[in-house]
Image (cartoon, rainbow, N blue to C red; front, top):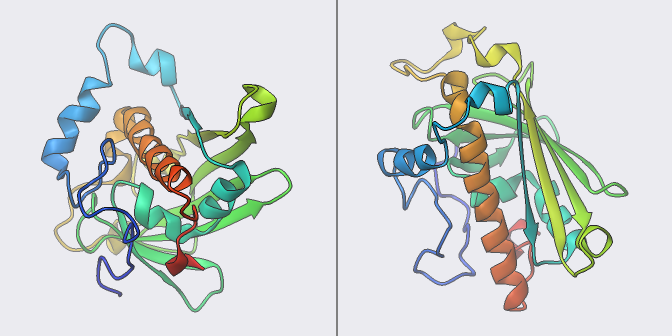
Length: 221
C-alpha cells in the first residue's frame, strides 16, 4: 500500500490552506464534526427531508469540460474529498485503491470511475475493504451553466443512494483490526459532509481557473 500523501496534491497552490477547503490534514475529525453538525439543523426532520438519498449541488466558475475531465480521473479525489488519500491503480485496469482516513489509517477504499464524456457524467463505484462488490455509488454530473443559468461556468450535481449495506457491514471479517467505525454510521451527516467536499471542489477549481492554472494538474496527466 502506498503511503498517504504520495501524490503532490495541491502542490500548484499556495502553501497556506485555501479558505473553505477542509481536508483531513488541516481539519481533524474532532474539528470537522462541529462544522458538519452546524449544517444539520434540528428544526426539520432530517429523515423526512433526505431519507434514503443524499443530493448536493453547486455552481463552479470554471469551464465545464475541464471540470468533467478532472472529476473523471479518480486521483482528483485525492484533492477535493475530505479523507481519501494515496490513490494507486491496482493490477486491474481502472480500479484504484486508496485510504479513507475517516475509517482508520489503514482502511482501504477501492474506486472505479465510470465516465461518459458526451453527457459529462462521472459515477464513482466504491467500497471499503474489498473490491469484488463496489456498492457505494456516487453519481456526479457536470452541466454547462450557460445553458441552465445563462452564465459561464458549470453546475455540478452529486447524488448518493442509501444502499442497504450502509446499515450493516456484510464483510466484517475484512475490517482492519481495531476499527469500530463503519462507513454508514454517519449517514445523517452525509448531506453536510458532501456539501463540504463539493465546496472544496468548487474552491479548488475556481482558484485554478481564475489564475490560469489547468484544472487537472500536471501530476495527473
